[in-house]
Image (tube, rainbow, N blue to C red; front, side, top):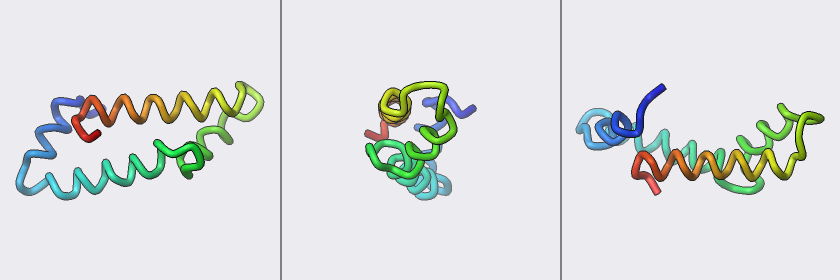
Length: 73
């Protein structure tokens, strides 16, 4: 797993910064919206195990926390 510090280093790197920002943009699009594709896939993976609303909210919260930790919010 890549630490928040390492993500910040990648963002600051001349060679890796652009693609790292692009990856974080994709991650944000997939996991931070209520109807985002990644959130829907996570909800589907846990069907029958937990309330889909709780799974969706938890997924979005975790994604936001990760983006904040790497300084991409």
